[in-house]
Structure formats: C-alpha cells, structure tokens
Amino acid sequence: MQIDDGPVRRITFDRPNVRNAMTADVALEIADALTGLDPETHDAVVITGRGEAFSAGGDIEAMAARDETTLEAYNRVRKTLGAVAENALTAPVPVISKVNGDAVGAGMSLTAVSDFAYAADSARFGATFINVGLIPDMGATAMLPRIIGLRKTKELAFTGSLIDATEAAAMDLINEAVPDDKLDERVDNLVDTLRDRPTASIGMAKEAIHDNLGQSWRDGLAQEGRLQAMAYDTPAHDRGVEAFLNGQKPDFS
Image (cartoon, rainbow, N blue to C red; front, side, top):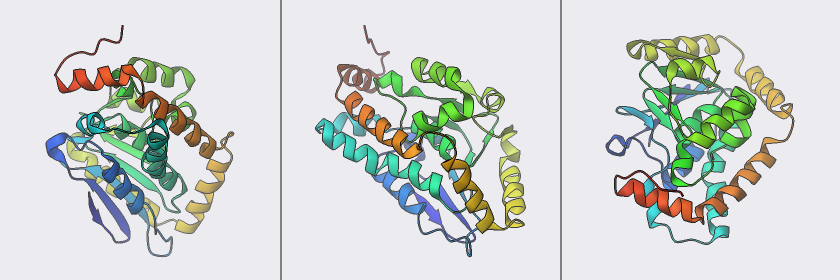
C-alpha cells in the first residue's frame, strides 16, 4: 500500500502485478490507514488502485497457503477485513473510493463501506466470492442490502457475475460512472466541495445515519465473520481455489 497523508489522506493499492489483490497484511494496512483521522486536520480519505485494477479481491494464492482452524479464520476475518469495514464506517471524515478499474470481491465490498464511490466507465464490479466457495465479506453482507436492495444483493452474491460501471451506478452501488480520463477530475471536484463544508459536522451526520440504519452493522459484521470462517472450511472453497490456480472453471457439483 502507498499512504500519502495530508488534508486528504490518499490510500493506493500498490500490487498492480496481481491486480491489487488483498492479503491479510494489505487489509491490516488499509484498516490502520483509516485510523487517526481528525476533522481538524483531515478533509477526506481517497482510496484508489495503481495499474489497471482497483482491487481484484482476496489473493487466491494466499488463500491456498492458509492452514487454520475455523476459530483462527474467524479471528483473522474480524481483525483484518472486518476492521477495514468498521474503520471506514466510523471514520470521522468522508471515505471516497476512486475506482480506477475492476473492483471485485473485497474490492467491491470496499466501495460499499465507503461514503462515496466514483468509477471509471471501464471498471467492472462483482461479488465473486461464490466462485471460490465463500460469502461476501469486508462489510458487504451488512451494507449491500441497504445500498442496492435485497434482491440485487442476492443476485450478485449468489451468481458471482460481473456488472459494468453504468449498471453499478444505476443500482446505486456507486455514485457515478465517468469517462476514464475524467475520474481524477470528478473526485477532485467532490473533495473540493467537501472541503467547503464543516468536516466535523459531516462526521456527526455520518455517525447518526449509520446508527439509524436498523440492525447494528457491528452485529452484521460479527455474523459475516462467523459465516465466512465456516465457508473457508468447506470443500467448495478448496475446489474454487484449486480451480482458480489451475486456470479452470470450478466444479461445485
């Protein structure tokens, strides 16, 4: 990860050779970068990716190398992916996903827990967890139904299919799809607008909005972590990872 601090803290996925895939260490870096934000000195956080992808989600090779119990998986998910979601949702300043390319798996989840998401027209989105026998995580099961609705969430989560940026905007997964060469300008304009507003008030409004969503997202994250830990221990996950590494289509029958 590349972290550039200032009035706007900029977090950049910096593993372009693997399409900015996430490992537990990367998630911990993101979670840490989403702490220590002060409305007196920070206006916003902008998250983006280097290269052609925003983030391709979980690193499948890292998944294949894991040897952990269900409890260990639960603790890892909660302390890494869950921490990213929790810190984004509680950050006292706006968190903006600048989606420069494909955002799938946890990459898509990150857009769901951000306050704003703007994407290049060429970007694609997908809750592709099911393709390796897992469930959506990093806050996706807690936030996606609230953003795009129950049926669309199920469609993405159950099929693992990809959608383009225009469709993502139409279902409110992102705020707007813009031409690739206009993405920086669009996000910079948003940041300029936010800078003209009282950041502390934005943070309080954000807290109030989240607290009034219904069921606590904290409870949602705990449930998500428990179920993901169980999913890691299934044959479907093993088959999905093996198929991915061998360049094959998984057979879950």
